[in-house]
Amino acid sequence: MEVTLTENSTHIVIDRGELRFNFKPQVKRISLEEFEKICCDNRDMQIEMDKEGDVIIMPPVHSETSEKNSEIVYQLKHWSKTDKRGKVYESSGGFVLPNGAIRAPDASWILKERLENLSDEERQGFIKICPDFVIELRSASDSLPKLKAKMSEYLENGAELGWLIDAGKKKVYVYRQNKPVEVLENPKSLSGENILVKFTLDLTQIF
Image (cartoon, rainbow, N blue to C red; front, side):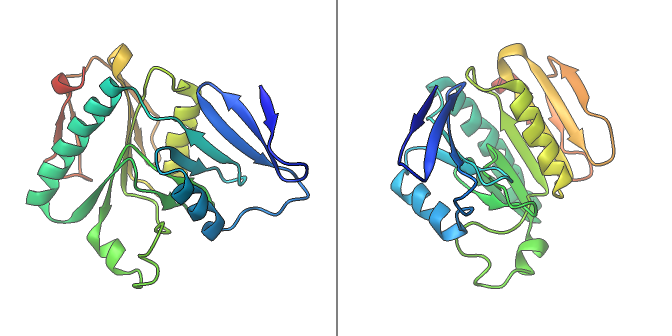
């Protein structure tokens, strides 16, 4: 279903629980400042923008998914406080990827040395950087093909490791640079490998 918002600006495409704002060809791609205003005006929604400039608004996730994601972020943050090499971000943290998309992974981690290379101004608002590590947790309303495409996008823009966790099916898709996607059936844990050194995600708290 599509709903026209204004005569010459945008319309909404409702697709599997998402509201996708497609800007007509004659309308310029919105600026980062305009995108930030949309986010500020809709703080109760998770909002992203794809590389084509389409603004995607996702409704709040179900309570069960939120609880599982908080457990993931908690475990990652707990490890990070000991490791001290990077910073952890939860699902409300947005990043401007090199391809122009603005994404907000469910959980992510960035090396501090990469952040320190940014100026004070560049650290304000949405940081122009792709996380080194990302997690997407699939909810019941999420399209698996779209999440897979998003994971591939992270790697294409510089992420070293990514986990797509499908809790409902107890399955994990592991994304690594220059390697085929590995599919794990009902794993009990996940290793951060040489990216998140000595980090292990306990999936018994997620599945």
